[in-house]
Amino acid sequence: MRHFTSVYDLPSLTEAIKMAREIKNNPFGHQHLGKNKTIVLIFFNASLRTRLSTQKAAMNLGMNTMVLNVNQDGWRMESELGVIMDGDKAEHLREAIPVIGRFCDIIGVRAFADLEDREADYAEKIINQFIQYSGVPVVSMEAATRHPLQSFADHLTIEEHKKIARPKVVLSWAPHPRALPQAVPNSFVEWMRHTDYDLVVTHPSGYELDPFFMGDIEVEYNQDKAFEGADFIYAKNWSSYTKYGEILSKDLNWTVTAQKMALTNKAKFMHCLPVRRNMIVTDEVLDSSSSIVVEEAENRVYSAQTILKLILEGLL
Ligand code: SN0
Image (cartoon, rainbow, N blue to C red; front, side):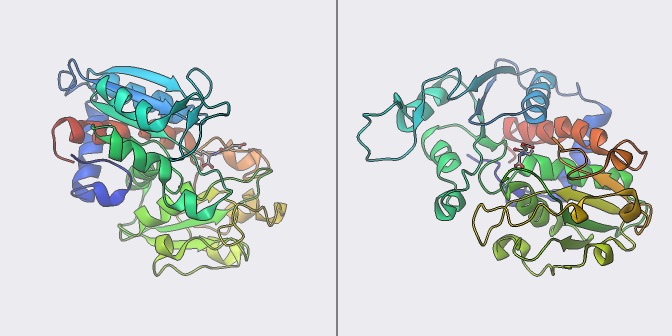
């Protein structure tokens, strides 16, 4: 049985993109594939696009969907093994996961990093327990260190909008009031390294990502320089990996503005959403025709549907 937690789980990225484009052209072409199949979507954290797009993808394939917001609707869950459960957590994941597995054919899980213990987050303790104990295929809907369905949709969006074979794609850190995980940038860099795009990463000093995800990608610490000649600007905030979970800067000089976009090659602006207006990016850029954030969000349906289809067909 195969699970989907990163780009490495796809048999062929080229084929996956091709399949996503076919699904986008004909979303109901496999509407009987999921007959009498059920997906359970488990959310330990908030969601808008992931929840709705994954449900929509499952419904397009004729699947039944059930959604559980753990910690709100369900029992509070213990995830550590070997603890005396004398606190407010009534149920252990060790039972909950196999029980959920008996009710469905695929499980989608969202479990963000808690940004307190880097080793625990980067060990992917929650999603790995689902993989170990559920008995069914597991799809990451953003785990502690990656958000692969988002990266897949991002890749599809760039393929649709690129004007040259090898576009310059810039991942730019931008300021945010809260500490956010590194999952989206980790996953974006890892996924982009599987394409032949020209990828540039720019961020203030101290925001270096885990070298495991960065591979041989160099950081350009000068944001203006990074933006020169860019075809796509992908903005995202993340908290520090080295000073784990800390906010080292809220410098609004890193906000994506129209002046900065003018340095680019008429770049398209991308963001995974939700986006903090006038922190990450100005209203002017977000409301301009260069922003493709809504198209990018729509593509979440087709990336999820491709993954679910591959799992239902036993091809993942
Ligand atoms: C999440 C993140 O990983 O950055 C999910 C992105 C798809 N983003 C947030 O939690 C944003 C919350 C905020 O307060 O803006």
